Image: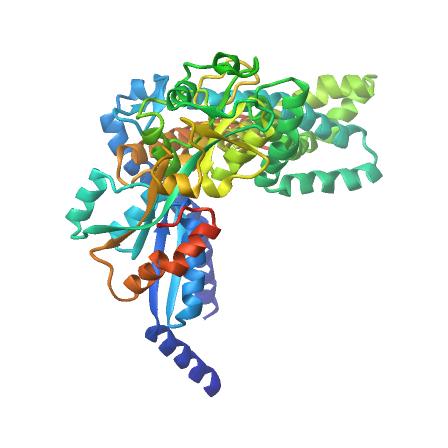
Length: 265
Length: 294
């Protein structure tokens, strides 16, 4: 009995002594956040980091509500969110954690190997409906998109579609993996995913003659690339700063590259 | 002392039984409260009859007709699978099967009802969708038909067990009277047993329908997710449930989009609520008819 009390006390004390960081947000940033948090915790046993997904919007809400220390986001903060944050005396500050690029993929059977930005837009708004219109086989185009509320969709919509409405009959998938799987199984499909989800089951195509890769993104040649953010309340400080420095540092960026993101330099 | 204990226990049980009522009202209250913004800002006719669902654009469009028609279409098509199979199973088990067959059929159906819906979704995604795509030469296998087939199979046990109950409520004397008049088994089944159990069977179908409307995981995985009003069995659809599930995580809390999703939830709740009430009314009438009224 006594022993139990002592262990409980000890546990309670050790919990009190360690700092906790709560991260929440974008599923695009999730793998990076998880892996860096694991390695970081191995090096700093006193800091514990809990990572949750949910989506960019969810993370931002939690940061504003004060229930998360870091909000992962695959997009910049919105005006409405900034206003809400101001109302709660929270000033979100962005740290770029890594770069991400959106690659266009088609089924390996497709003979198309590259499209122009204009062609991509025409496909996704529904102007181009058959592959033969743009030099492919006579087959209907099956446009595959991420759900219209995901961060990846938002980025694609801004970078590729210039905010025109995506065609109604586009197949909406809830995850990057869902898009890749559907494109791999569907001869006439075209889809878009993060660089980490490319494989030999799908064929990556160039946009305006540029293939997506670490080099082309860093040289700013590839059109569909975007920064991934970790938002904090005010300038990061204390343990949060320690962690963010780790992510943007050499080791963190190496992890980012291993996971298929584009490291910052 | 003893009477105090008894009273206490009685109160605890009373609290437990009222808890679900409390939860029900709690859910209704929250659904309604969160929908208020959308109810106020979006004209209800534009909401229910609008053909464009573009919640994240500027300006946004909140028309849920494609979502409603998606839900109705998958449920309707699924009925063609679960009603004949479910009802057929119930009739067979109740009227024809011998004890030995019943002994393994019943557990098998119970196991089918215990399969989590995500497993059906997974099966549909990995096996049925590619199969349909190949054999019907479709642009994509993620469509209304795939979702309906998986939903239909999932709902078979619900219809089977509820209509089997209904059949077993038919008093033995009905059947005996029929046989005594010289009717054979087929005539008895068709003219006596089924009509007597009819309202119970209809109840089971309505309950199945409610289950179909509310199912989320399967449609999220295999229905394709395109917010269009379906014009064929092979069109991709986006039922109400999958819209809520896919978008709730990303909609900013307190935004109009967030509230509109709650309004869809409210509508879904009303639909299933009405279906349940209809089922309840019918089954009550039927108990009275068989002289088992309360």
